Length: 232
Image 1 (cartoon, rainbow, N blue to C red):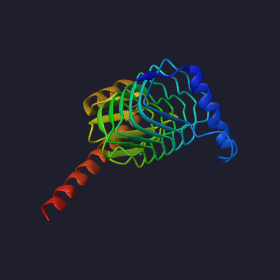
Image 2 (image 1 turned 180 degrees about the vertical axis):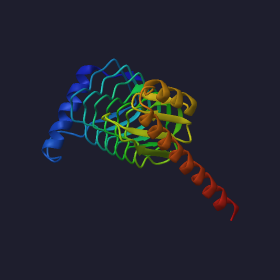
Image 3 (image 1 turned 90 degrees about the vertical axis):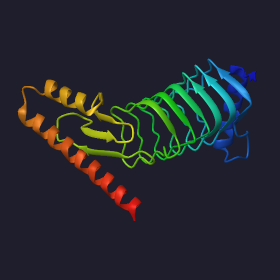
């Protein structure tokens, strides 16, 4: 697979931005196919609607890049940075994503179709309506993420009335992950962390426990409903 140069990338991105600015009358849509992209920089650019297919991407920077509605098909990512990127409506099809960061990225309506995610960092990211239905997940980090209406993963979350900016407590049931603030771990570790952090505030400890128990009851109800449907 040929290694694409930074100069080629810059030229393609420049043509793509002109293509966007002129509604397709000038320039050309950026299409990257059958190339290797290693130690390259796409940061702070507009690649809305670009196409990447049959590509290997390693040690590459997409930070603060607009990749809305971009399509990645059969792409292998390793050690790639999408921090603070705009990824709304982005499509990952048949991709392999390892040791990659989406820290504080906007992934609303994104889709990871038949894609493997290993050691992927979604901390602080917007995961509203993100589709994980056919994704294979092996270790993700989702502290301070916004997991409302995530698809393909059963996430039960609620807001706890505290002074923290992000005061959600969430349970990723299929993955066994509990998160609140910068904490991520098991239920046992969560209870230990709450007891330690709020040892001098019994009211707040009790509030967290009520939230945890509510989530556990909802998880139990979901399981009972699924068993009932499967038996009919």
